[in-house]
Each structure stands twice: as structure tokens, then as C-alpha cells.
Length: 117
Image (cartoon, rainbow, N blue to C red):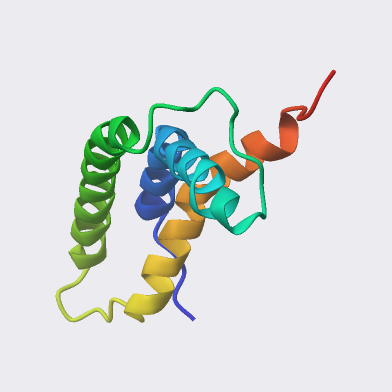
């Protein structure tokens, strides 16, 4: 079994720190519009600007972050110690990279107190 390269682990964990912002934007959007429309959550009562300001903010942030994440992982995936070395299964690499990027947000959600004080 091939071990996950140390550089890829470090890069994905470090990319996970600024990833908190795009993940929060996605969650905020989902809670206030599609999930609230389905009746699964209650939207923020003061959120009455509509979706356009959030699209204007979220689309560039998500595009820049996802582009940087893909580029960093694409370059790390292609990097090999030896030119005949097997890079391993692509699905496992990208799944592991995504989970490592989500790890800081998961830790933040687990550690921060939520709800009314």
C-alpha cells in the first residue's frame, strides 16, 4: 500500500485553514435559501437582501479557492520521486485531499460552542 505523501498532507491541511471562509459561505447560503425553502431550517430573519449580494461575494471566493486547491493538488499529484513510480489511484488521492482540507473546519465546528449562551 502506498503511503500518502507528506507534502500533500501538509499542503491540504494548510489550505484547510483559509477554506473555512468558503465552506462557511456555502453553509450560510444553503441554510438561508434552499434548506429554508424546503422548511428544513429557518433563514436568518435579517437577511432580506436576496441572493445577488451573496452570489457576488461567494462566487469569486469559491472560484479562487477551488482553483488554488485544484492547482496545488494537481501539481502534487503529478510530482513523483521516480519517473516510473506509480502515482496510486486518483480517486483515493482526491478524496483524501478533500477530507484533509475539510479537517480544520471540522475541528473548528467541534471545538467552538454553538447555540445561545
